[in-house]
Image 1 (spheres, rainbow, N blue to C red):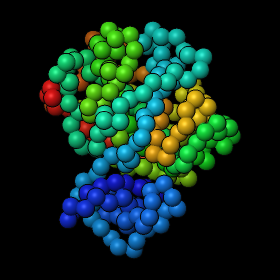
Image 2: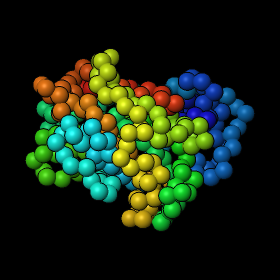
Image 3: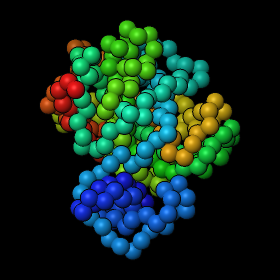
Length: 263
């Protein structure tokens, strides 16, 4: 099923099961409990990020071709970094070029995992049991900050640098290790690969992360981006005011965000 957070036509913030892209049945009870829904049909005015994550963990260099295009070595274990939760952005809302670093803002199409229940030291064979669902993500990155700071926190965490959505597809409806992922910039395909090409599978990532940290319900895991990012192109292609960047994951949908001028 598709689960979404959205604003209704009468201004209510609702979590619900989508019937189509304009209507849903509201959730009864807790998002991270047993899912039950009201028979009431409500209209969707606009989508919000599908979760409000307590933490966002992301994985670098998880596609061989992406590591190669950036001249980086493949990590022996998952390369983990974090994005600030204040970077989360709703579908359709503008990515803002940061005033302090507007020139080399790049896109990264990714599959995002949403954890459904507390996970600590989870064996790989059981890892997907802890997943609520999956959504599309854009790991927006300021490449000059990433290069100059020698670590990635600022580069990855400016406000609006973590678009998520448009909704969440529950774990029973998607094989996360075998779906196509694409990015399109102003309609032009920039990235296109299968998650089957990931170095570390979703099961492996969840298990590994849960042995480092407690994964709370709602935690978002960004699984890495394939080749085709703007920084690796000749000449480089960075986001500019007026652009539209889309992330599509097979079996989920399309996350679309315009790009605005400096904040």
